[in-house]
Image (cartoon, rainbow, N blue to C red):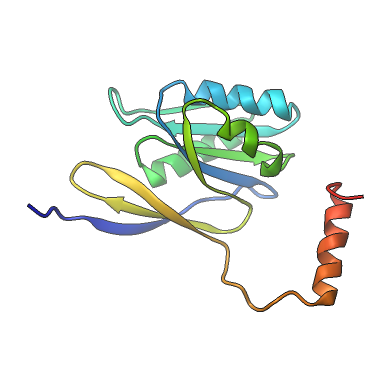
Length: 164
């Protein structure tokens, strides 16, 4: 028997001068473990994390070290409203510093995106609930990198400390 499903896109709110990570996990201690992964990797980073429980009380669990980023993570989690997803809103650091640590959290299943770009989450909704199918991260390419664009990229990486 076929069941109805609706597809939606949900825009995430990105912190000003910050980034967001959207992922999927499978256990209620996700919030604590992601919190520890962040503070043990980049202690000065400001962040909030929210996790959508998929069974039991089905609450949005939240934590972080910055109240505004905690609130924004919850707001984004409420907008996505898909079980077992989590959102990290961050400032004063980059996702590149955290992605391996977050992927190493035992209950993390995978990541959908880590970005400062406008992002839309593709959500499927059925009678059972909601699930994330993927994301639209930023804009489509406008061309192929030429030499001045390559030089700009190299300069940026040195400016922000990722290359010498």
